[in-house]
Length: 200
Image (cartoon, rainbow, N blue to C red; front, side, top):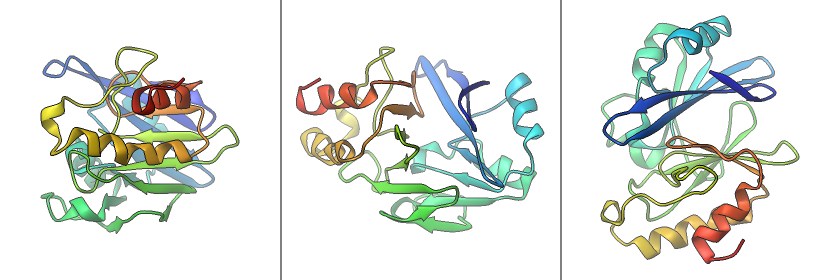
């Protein structure tokens, strides 16, 4: 567990199958304690999260990033927010679904991304001056310091998927916190632009 910004901690669980880290976030915003896409936690991560309990909300970016959310929802008795377009495809029942443009707890904006692996794929944007973008499967932080897409077979149309992701470039962000791989804490928008439109 590492604190990467004031009020934001990240912990990782290494996936042998994918050969990269699955990351979860703990956000403290005012009186709210929020988990995002939580993978398994142990040791220091578990202690840090429980030190911040009670957890109020768990936010999920897409149907494949539910991870340990159901278990933590039961443990903490918190609310579970799922993307509206993915909720019907998930076995877990949402406390609430969210859609594009919605302001979520903690001042987090939901950004729906079209033509991705799952119909509800969403990013979260936090406007803290320098801007923080949080993604699930939309972008993978690999190799460190750069981003890539999922393998092309995961998409119905990879070019349409890239077009859908170009929406992210409308946001003023410097940091990209990824659900998979290595987050980019500064200069992230340039890396996303390089991937999507070939500029830096």
